[in-house]
Image (cartoon, rainbow, N blue to C red):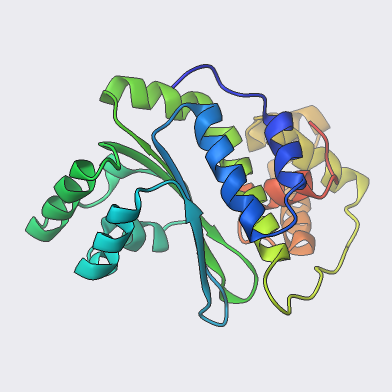
Length: 239
């Protein structure tokens, strides 16, 4: 793990993807850019169709399917119940089956550290964007804290590109954001909390919440982080 890569360059490379095969190349580039062992993206569409790309070894993928690990994987079950990114250490590994699964994963080179970002798209779509590697707890904490915001944006942008290639997908209806909605979303995108954003705009937090919720609805997002990612990916705000 090295210095954080330049986010704009990574987003520009993702923008060039023209199909699912290009996303596999993109995720390999992202893994190398962040200097982690693995990076994986997996989605389930509204119709139950699944798609995945990533850098896990083929023998681990085959073993995961063969052993039916999907049923006991704390990453999948834990993230399905969450909207926010989660460090694997904060998941429930208390069962014997979960601990055995983790040791098997580490033995296959997945890594002892992981960070997963759950994503909920339109019409019931669910996806996970995951990074994993082998390092100390202190190194991983520093890495995730430093890169957390950019990884969230990348995850949602990656998901947005994948959705573009979903068969039969209709384009998202474009609804322009108002000037105040753009200002509010921009301040949140650059890291202001709600109190700081409201103070900067000389409005109450309640009024700010109205603008944010209105923007979220227009963008078809399920939470503020998702809304910021969509606004950035569509060029509605620039930071």
